[in-house]
Length: 122
Image 1: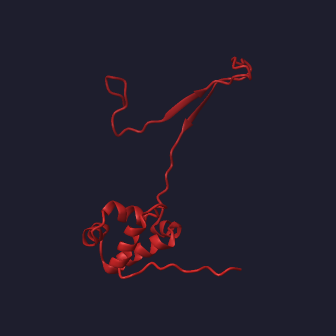
Image 2: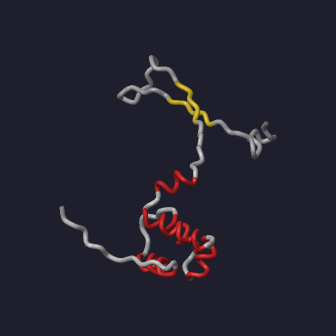
Image 3: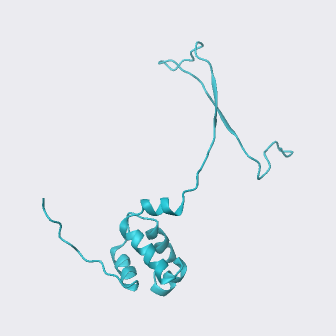
């Protein structure tokens, strides 16, 4: 349904249609190639909790599991640890760049440590 301004009402489904003109190498219109019409459809499938956890880096997964063991929400953990809830959320989602001092502070609050370990040479 459209309103008086010929725009779709909010909440209605919008189908995006675009046209492609086929051009030849020189950039001139090639009458042998017809205009094509296509539509874009977005189908997003929600991932399960297990699928999300399987993709997380080990340290993020550890922090998330430990927080759940302690019975804290992300906001509770942020308040109690003195870190921002934004940091907690991004870190648990697997943010690839995080300040090391904040990571250490978070882990220490949770009763864990982050220690360097030498790799064995093969």
